[in-house]
Length: 420
Figure 1 (cartoon, rainbow, N blue to C red):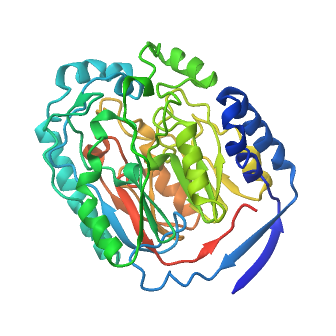
Figure 2 (cartoon, rainbow, N blue to C red):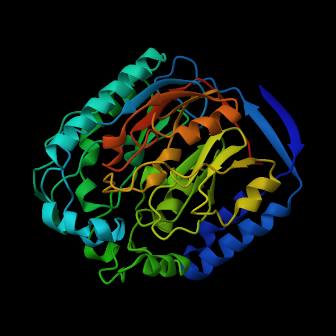
């Protein structure tokens, strides 16, 4: 059954992204410029239609999620146990802030501070308990020894953790997609999730593993010139990243779902070939839009641009979206979250303070949010959304907020269009 309703505003921004396949052979620089120009120009459209499609696989299916806000029924929550500091390779350096470089140089290939990890483990256990009390079924990855060193014909490394399922898993409808990743320390991270994924597959879910990159030196700009934040701003403005276009790579956390429309960013860990692989794989049922931000260190979209409801998005004021008018003209409400309250002396080895907006929607009217971020509690109250407060400050240090620490496997809802 198909039900259609129209509202004011609109965009045909997806048309720009459909350029991708035909333009690959003509060079990425020109293609990217034309894609962004076309996307911005398309914002002048004046009408948008929301279409709801009743999907027969939704009911009683083990894997089914179309967006970030339908009622959450089952979720994978990561593990902090055995977390190891990644070796200080060029891709890790490009994704971390200069103040923490001595930490990586000293502890790369060793455990994160054990007392800190223990506190993170306890916080995530409490988070799981609260999710269960809210009626959500919680699943966990396997315990893995991440200290084991490994080698391929192209590189050597040790592991990292299985803390952030959002980085490696993306659920689109009844399909679970394993991302190829871009850090060598995360090459074998999928092993922690395979038992779960195999179970979902046996129960009827689709399972796709994106092409695994070799992660040879050709994937990285070995001379990536980062020294200061100013350097990062200049490079980002020029469209230069530590990952090259040698082969497809992406982290799942660089994709944000809103029904038939999926928003992706080119980042330090996601290249245009990776986005193009995802676009072709999901077409024609889904549209992948490339958007960009004034961000000196783009890595994962969900602490920059977090869609929390139909036509409702949190947009980081420190990293403004270059295509934000496209959303406003489509009738979306763009909310600016307040400045994070996390203290300056709290270690954030792999992220920024803006994890405060990295929230997990339990449904359109309930959100899991940091218990210490009082100003964002007020913001959600003003939006008519009740807050489920949990403190995960020590878990934040390992690189993620509630959205990062989870992968929603099943939400109760149907596939809809919110952007065309």
